[in-house]
Figure 1 (tube, rainbow, N blue to C red):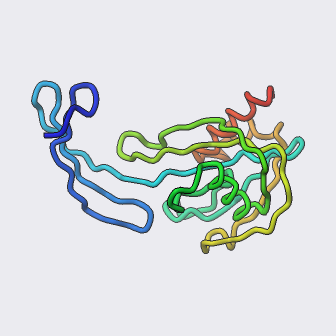
Figure 2 (figure 1 turned 45 degrees about the horizontal axis):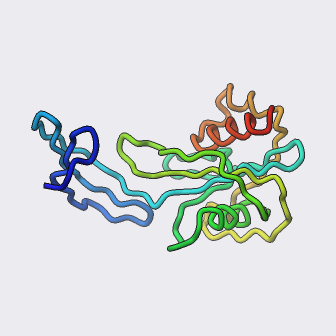
Length: 184
């Protein structure tokens, strides 16, 4: 048995069920503090970055197709950590260039969070970029080839969040944190 993971829970076993393009699905068994056994599905994810790119009084968002939801979503430029050893800020800059055609020489960490800690280990780091430089977009996925870049006035963000036009977690967290950081 492995040492206690947290709160008196010990991981007893872990079995790989599926190795996918982005994620791995495991079945993990734990022993609780009183000896009870629980089995949980666990998703392993490489992690992700997102960028709140502020240009004057606008924030740069992207609208792209999300297969799991079968619809387009209005989101921050973002992507997974799929380049081994790449620093978080470099990954964020890469994604900003790929998706929005912008670069940012300076990035500031706004937030780090676990997207769905009940079943997945994915951690997302959100950056703020305020000094934007034009760059050539470099779409690397089919979805990125068809995304659109949208500039949204920062003053419109609270309404987009309140009426449900933006529901993506990283975007909600990033925008709310950025608005607070910017004193808006």
